Length: 167
Image (cartoon, rainbow, N blue to C red; front, side, top):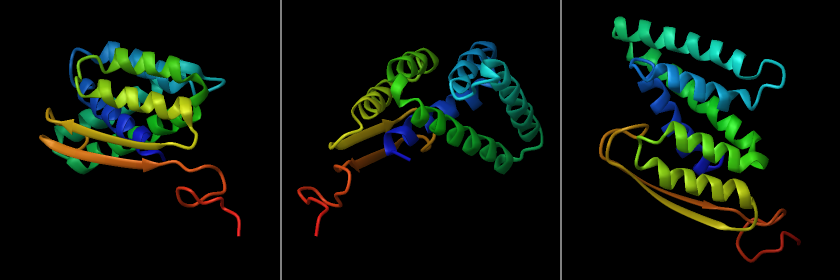
């Protein structure tokens, strides 16, 4: 999965899991269900809301029992699901970007991550992508984490910059 997708999916999943235990849950559930519903042709957001309610019940039970591993499993699952939706909907980059901006409005570092993701989804060509993420408020990488992501896209059939992929 593209590092820009992973970064935004992890931030979104962290935001979602945090919202599961607050008054923001109703808004977050509806918005994330819409995002997850992009992938579902028949169930749409309704099936995604049910999925999110099950995930929330698991997170709440995990917190009640001090089971950090179980909560982390939900976070990992949601990160993978959101990553799959972002990747599968590259053709809807503007809509995905709009949804993410609304859902992650409180997370200041997410703006740069969303912009980088949007560029990757729109271009998907022969580019070199570098991103520096300073997630000082916590989140997927932990409090005070600084992450550098270097991602290289090469033309189809090539393996290194400047090669033609032909022998």
